[in-house]
Length: 531
Ligand code: NA7
Image (cartoon, rainbow, N blue to C red; front, side, top):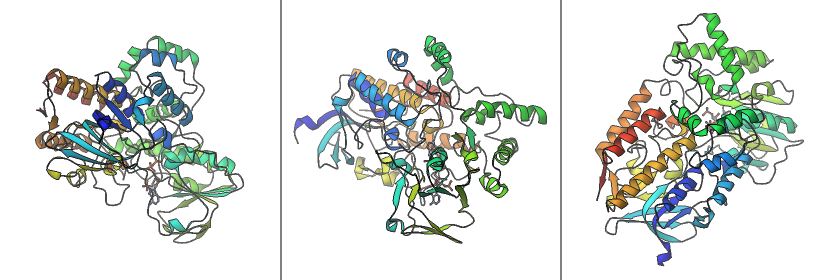
């Protein structure tokens, strides 16, 4: 192998995590390279280009803060950014910080093996290339491995088969077509109103109804943008103090301590603001079933007010805890079911038996389509890592180490896998926080640690099984106090993938997590061993 392919650090992924990691690690004077399987930057925003794809966090927050020049010069056109605009932003960042020269696109890293004698990682790509690297940064993303359920007959479908997370790069024309959509998660809820507008008919196959709150998206309020930009640092600092690092004002009041009138009015106010802050309407919605049921009841009534057909409205009313799956944020989702060309099928009642060459069969009926959209989500949080064959010390594989669920320390490092870091891995706030804020915090922690190693001439860092076990216990203990673990079958629990170990993966609470990381760093990186 030529020395050209020997690196100090290799980053896998060039989404928001990989790009920032590249920028920061370069700053340490390291020889670094990123591999990306897509043909461009953007990560999940590169792949999820289905109509209606949009972020559910405000644009002024869902962006990097590491460069004040960048955040001042970039302007978002809407309150919630669309996928194309987020992708343009990612490209802009990659050019502005001259990142592209160190990213190799259209290359999937397939295998990583740790060489204990040389203390380096050996990597292989799907192009047959090999590399070595002292440090591995896994910026592989939380929602990057799409989930295609193994429906019988799926490969026999002769119409147009689409998956929201692998959407074609050319425009898909649904005009005059009969379309089926399987799934009613966030992706489906964003896509359905737009496809309904174009298609001849749209049939939605719902297994579990989801809670969706109106986005009330709008053009960016320029005065608001100017106010935020005049004080961006303080705005960011305030948001980072919130549990999800998102600027939603929590209401410090129990849903059970207010009068019925006050409760109703408070829900109405939040509903009219829209979006994720609805989950923070009262301070006990995430921990108390009785409190939560008041929110469930409110949303059920909203659905029944909007959707005219009684049976359709009933089917759309979720029977789970509100917020134990990520809330969906929509534009005209429920309203779409009032259209005469849109049909809802409850596949919990009548499960899909198989896919046919021109449609699908449920327990009670045959359906025919020109196009079938799988909006069936992701093997979230661990799927992209599991897709790479990773072997650490003593020939132990990551797959066997994680056979009972992901184990790591601070969501950053796995015992037995020296010098390998995961960005926004399971065990970190990741998907329960503003992802870009979480990414920057992780990358800053990792680069500070690498700098510490450089200054103190340490070659390797790893964590211990003890630190790992204690951390996982702590993450689980926090989750057990909430309704996340008992309220529904979410991808946070791995429950959407048959056979995946059921364990609540994200750490709840961004500020407490940051506090912990700062404490660890201040104590010479307690829980990490150096050599
Ligand atoms: P989600 O939220 O995981 O939604 C996937 C949907 O697909 C959901 O309604 C699932 O029903 C359904 N699904 C999955 N597998 C099947 C099978 N086998 N049969 C029928 N229906 C199925 O993915 P999204 O892409 O919408 O959103 C993911 C995240 O992206 C979202 O939370 C935001 O953070 C952004 P189920 O609920 O499992 O019964």
